[in-house]
Length: 474
Image (cartoon, rainbow, N blue to C red; front, side):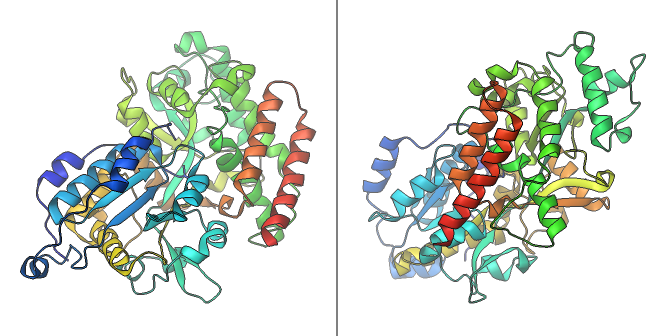
């Protein structure tokens, strides 16, 4: 495959943005329907002469094309530019359609059944594979799998073959503004003297509540950014935060999945969730109108000191107009909930971003798709885009140490991965369904509005988990 793409590819594709992610930070940006329709009906590039095709093995001699259904709205603009530049440079049509936040499964279900189905799509792990295994191609012979640094990260079928390949590793935790924290530590009567003192929930709670009481002196509206509970924007709580109690429960039981979640660490979840909503930039009853972009803007503008999110959030922080947070002040700390031994806990690190190639696509389109993703992880231009445009910490042996993301949150992620702390693995990939997560989020909103007790929330989680696990087993 041709290694060099015209220089315009880098000049125009360097759009700083990221996520996940679950997944991750999700704006409502999406490819407009009219643009999608135009792309679907647009004539493909004429087939190149044999001599030209032989000279450029990036292009498919059979006239294949690529259709990527993108999961992350926050990187839609970057993907659109990458697709346009790759098409211009190689003659291979690449179309990218981005699902709106919280609608990916629905859009994929609609698109995969169409005559112009995605050739490249995402699953979130084993649960996603079970839903889409009829469309997942065996990736054993692809560059994606052959160059995967840790092949245990792949999603495997019952036959032991890889069907989903992670394209990034991500971390999330509590992002904090170190300048605000240092200002607090210098105050008379501060309950801690440095970030090193904050390595458990009790200390975090004492610091946060003292900072909230002194918010005017600190020049902030609240310690934490608003806890976004707008439907479709609540993934940080019903997925990412919920990962911690599930992680500890599975660890206690010595299993990797369960049909009956007991939510034994419910009180620990409540500890941190209450701390978020009661020491925030707005009242708990207003959280149903808040989106992730609201909370990230509050952090970027210095209106708060902390926000829960992942390393992908740097693209949102740095691009907010009027941003006042210096790059060197953007730091990470783990999410403490009061679990015994959490002083040794690190960030939540893993991935739910697995690329799959549509096994039911035309052979020429499969070949074009394999070539496209191989270019992203093997060519100098593609690797630069993966790291510096898309913000991926790509888990492939083709990336050297000097090809890791250099933004502040990525640096923090690698620091935690290398400091001996125990990372919290991503277990939300085994959550039974999107319906379960949506119901969990809705219960949290009702709790904030005073319409549900915490026992009601716990009962919702336990009941809906069992129901959805039973439904997926049928």
